[in-house]
Image 1 (cartoon, rainbow, N blue to C red):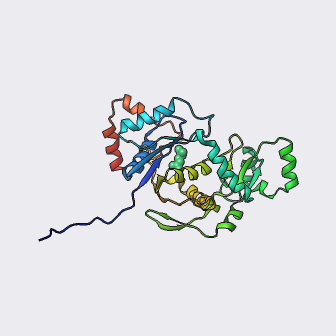
Image 2 (cartoon, rainbow, N blue to C red):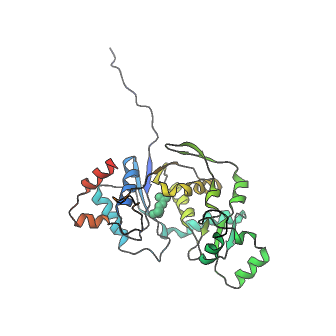
Image 3 (tube, protein in one colour):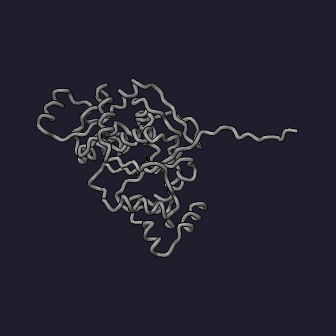
Length: 281
Ligand code: GLU
């Protein structure tokens, strides 16, 4: 008699990633995020988001890899170091620019902060000052050498794409509302790319099927889905995990002075200890 066989239904392999910026050593908040992405992964990738060269330091690059290894998290393939691939981002930007989806923004931080105090909504949303400049006014400022960023016109982009949806674990199908972040910067004044542009490009390049990251980036996801559509890139599945909080209830923010992993290590705390706490978090 033939034995019963059990079949496992085919499951899409999960390719996830951890993408810190090497602006400091990893702390617990990073480690939690890395672990959340790693534990689900069939293939785990590492990427260092270092286009902001003024804030990155050489010692943090190997430091991040060392800390992840210490935690027992390993990745496959080469580490993608964004600053070595600026030409890729320039090509993606050029595609959007050629379709008239970008406009130069000459505003300084102070201009934006001032305009945002007007009753237009959340402070982080660009008030749109430069969107309304005439092309001659734009030209005049460019010729005068005024530094500018390039912003995505969400309205024009929306006109191209129409309604978009993405799958968010725990929430299900969600309609993308990129207006929530407003006309985001795709090329900064100091470097001809931005987080939003690079992350979308690289998630596709690295074959990421599941973007698992903190809920602080949930709003950004809506813009990323729009950019993927504009650039003809696939939209991964998204999962936004809660942020780890310290004993005082405050979030272990990436830039806070909460202890780094190496400080915990020096104090004699083991990786197993840290991961056990994550299990219970
Ligand atoms: N580099 C980003 C950060 O450190 C993370 C980007 C992402 O996971 O999409 O906040």
